[in-house]
Image 1 (cartoon, rainbow, N blue to C red):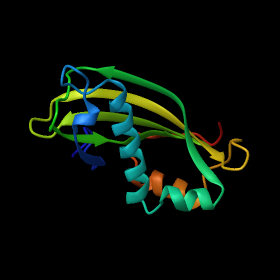
Image 2: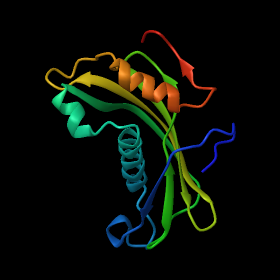
Image 3: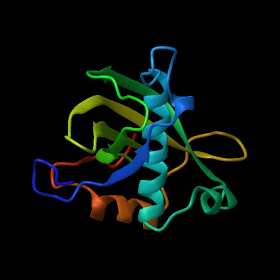
Length: 151
């Protein structure tokens, strides 16, 4: 999937299962947050960092805040493309812009922003992103990504 600025955007493919839907046969609103969480995790994996590895290095990512806007419902068996693009890279946090689109026709279903904090696994206190992880996100981010030295 290509971002508007021409940089290759990350997209995670997933399928809507029965368990994702409500009694009306559409995706229950909170499940879009799960799809977006999985896309952020897969983005990390694509950059060479597994959550299990990071926990072993006393590091976790926690969602500080989220915002979601729902446009069109997804339905059972829809294939989805879920993006996870870093729009702001700070010393101890990342702000992601995410979209969920139907793969068949690229219809925008849901979009949101998530501020994800980097914390120590043992104390849940903020910690700086490790230099290699920070560099990987900086290299993979779009030219318009805002980077701040401190939080």
